[in-house]
Image (cartoon, rainbow, N blue to C red):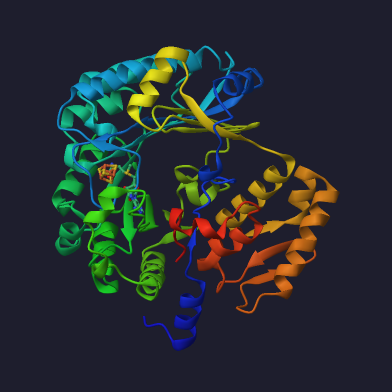
Length: 452
Ligand SMILES: C[S@@+](CC[C@H](N)C(=O)[O-])C[C@H]1O[C@@H](n2cnc3c(N)ncnc32)[C@H](O)[C@@H]1O
Ligand code: SF4
């Protein structure tokens, strides 16, 4: 599927370094003036039966993949992981003492890094610590991110035994040339074996992570990877645009930039994979997620959080572990990023909150608009008026009118009740969100990834 000259000119004009809007304001604006005292007060203010979602971060991998932008580090020895678990258990106990006693736990997500680097006994121990402190129930959606190269049958037993009912498998790309260029060799058989381990144990809810825009990837090679993924028939597929930020993720300096596809190739890849997955029965959700029509992600209202797109509608996200981010009705909190800093803060304070953001009324309004655009490519003024009042809805309407009046590329349409992106505008949704972002600093381009 080739791009015509008009599309090419459009892509080149619109390709820019922009946030992925997993929060608003984005995490680079968080401030150290928000700390453990705020976090304790915010937790104390939650309703007694608040719905909670919990994210737990394991910042360790066997080795670093060259493309990785996650907060993690390589370790060949296990003792740093074991020591980290001691701290994590201490933080779990402190936070559990501060959350409402009658809370409901809707979602539990272990991410990283690679949670399956944990030894069997530690998977069991961490599962037990969470159960002893939070209301983990059969109805709790409990997901774990899996590096297939680390999986074994006894680890699968342990995960299923502690209540895991969803898994997310890191695939990235099946082409050996791409794998060599990203420092991650992982055969199709290894990925399939990890999937089978969970399917054999009754876990039917499976996501696979892929990345487009990787070095040496072509439209053709990616189509081949997608065909192989379709054969494995996951319920959900996340295909992230590669974020190349070597100034921040130093391991990415190992990537030969001359082998990276440019904006036009990236755009063509995204377009082709979308039509390939649509033909295979997957519905596109938001920018980079796909799900089978009968999957809850395709049926329930879509939301966005730090893990990407989710059905999670809880008002409160609790982040546990180094670098983890929490979201409360009052604002955001982030734990210290390095394991050393996290460990010493938990030892001294019980909590590791290092920075955050207190949401002002205008932040809430813009956060709502940006989340709806990222999820639905649209928002309704009725929803804004219902959530924020008529005055704010009118203020926003004036901003939208100005945007529609200055829309040379035909990305936007407005009606009496709403505002939506045209099919032509959808791939560029991040650039539309950026226009609602009151904090975006054009000079901060190096912090953000390519918007197409
Ligand atoms: C924590 S990892 C997944 C679990 C496990 N560690 C693994 O790699 O199999 C989360 C996902 O983030 C995505 N990711 C990591 N670095 C990225 C980057 N620079 N750009 C886009 N996506 C990236 C990958 O798809 C990866 O599977
Ligand atoms: S992609 Fe996964 S396995 Fe690779 S370094 Fe990142 S977190 Fe670790």
